[in-house]
Amino acid sequence: MEQIKTIDQVILALDEIIADSINKQNPLGYFAALYRNVTIKVKEGIKNNFFDDGPRMEKLDVVFAKRYLDAYQEWQVAQKPTESWKSTFEISTKYWPIVLQHLLLGMNAHINLDLGIAAAEISKKSNINSLENDFNKINQILSSLVKEVQNDLSAIWPILAKILRKTGKADDFIVDFSMKLARDGAWKFALSLAETSEDEIEIAIKERDKKIAKKVDLILKPGVLIKLFLRIIRLGEKGTIAERIRQLAN
Image 1: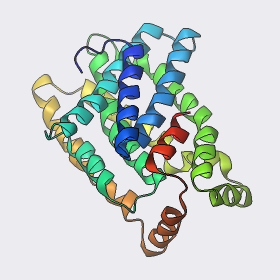
Image 2 (image 1 turned 180 degrees about the horizontal axis):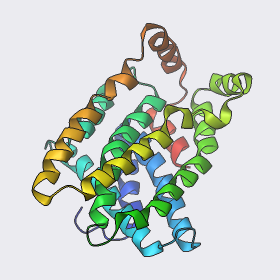
Image 3 (image 1 turned 120 degrees about the horizontal axis):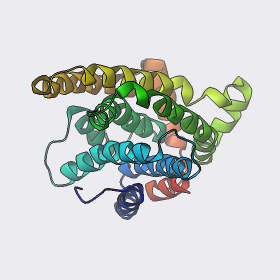
Image 4 (image 1 turned 120 degrees about the vertical axis):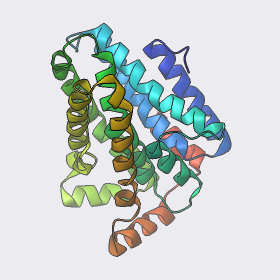
């Protein structure tokens, strides 16, 4: 993925993953579809001067996305990506994880590990604190997509819409999984990497990677009662894998 240098090229690469996942009925397309929507929102933000520094934000988006795209490519050719991504990709062959769990697994690896690395990398020759405001604006973009994702998941599992209406937490359904906390953690990791000497950065990344990989169990093994509830959801999910990917991508 070395040739990817612009946000448009990132979107095209994600389109390829989505198309391939639809063709192969591969659940890895769920996260790619969500990620494509986020990337398009970031592109729109850059175009509309939403960020303090548009060119820098595009650079961050590309460096950030390449970590996912490279990991995906490594997995496809039987190479070993980071532990966080390996743990995520392995789940794509399992029957029981629901769509939401696949999305959360992707966010866990990409936000908790990759985002901090990317932020530190583009800030090597500048003060990383100058990036913080634009970094935080990503939270606003994610929040704007929450209802859209909920609607997609409700279409896949119709009972979800009724549950959200009754609980009155429709606006917090995805955010409550600590999306913002994950990004806060990513920022702290970025600050830590920015202060780490070059010869120790890889060690710091590997330690973080092991820690994040362990979070997979929190998503897949949330307890007996919740696990039973998730299995009920799984049995009630509508459509084929390809149809669900298209639902998330539209």
